[in-house]
Image (spheres, rainbow, N blue to C red):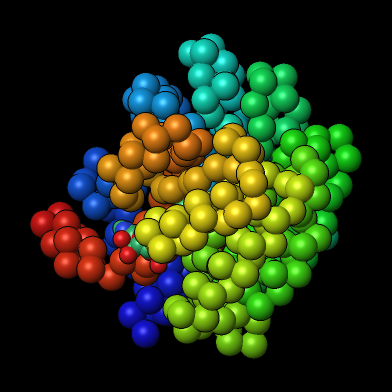
Length: 308
Ligand code: FAD
């Protein structure tokens, strides 16, 4: 119930206005978002890279409502990729992109515009020696996002996909995506979805996650195991052994600020461990999804708000 309530609030303009009075430096925000500017995310990337962790960077922004906003997001990615290259970090860090942030939802032009914008980001990533992964958003966009991915892969086959274990369709999507060269991030899913399309019971979501993991680990692609759940991490390791996966033929992924010691432990053990690092001023929706996953953080959050 609390999770659903927080995810509904993620869409509220009034609450957003109230919450975004918090500075990004306040504890609850900076735990999950290292800063609003490129210099800050580059500094965080450098620190993560120092102990062998890989990085994927998300410029925060979703629900883009006009073409100028979409263009500003593309520019932010192009500037970021240039900064990573200038700092010698392109081999450590790739980027994650939400199609909604680069125009997918705009009436009539959205699909074409977001594909064109994604192409520009993929080209810049390729030119600087790195890659792009397309984040997955709510279920109404899944088909279109996978279609855009198929188009992008004609020119940029290195582009990564994301699938969400809570969706009933995802085991089939994993089968379709488990081909050679296909990079697939498997996460549980972070949006408020109806029971008609998604498992709502946590236990059912976990069972689906394991089924999807099996498909991806048994397949020919490159699984990206995105979870903080110790049981899922253990099962992923066991499946990699069972399917004779060579080291480096899959990776673990976690979010910036969550289970940092475990991230370091996996990297030190020789696993490929990638950290998802968001940055930018539009951190509200992202923060609300993190609170929904961990309502125990709510007291800390409310205290930060009240002390404003
Ligand atoms: P859970 O069962 O939720 O959590 C397991 C344990 O992790 C918890 O017990 C707790 O110890 C810790 N934990 C989890 N969340 C938090 C938190 N917020 N704060 C503190 N501790 C926490 N979702 C999408 O829908 N689309 C995407 O494109 C997407 N990309 C992602 C990329 C990466 C690299 C990762 C790691 C997640 C991504 N997610 C995405 C979010 C994902 O769907 C889950 O909502 C999130 O990862 C929590 O699920 P979990 O697997 O960690 O398991």
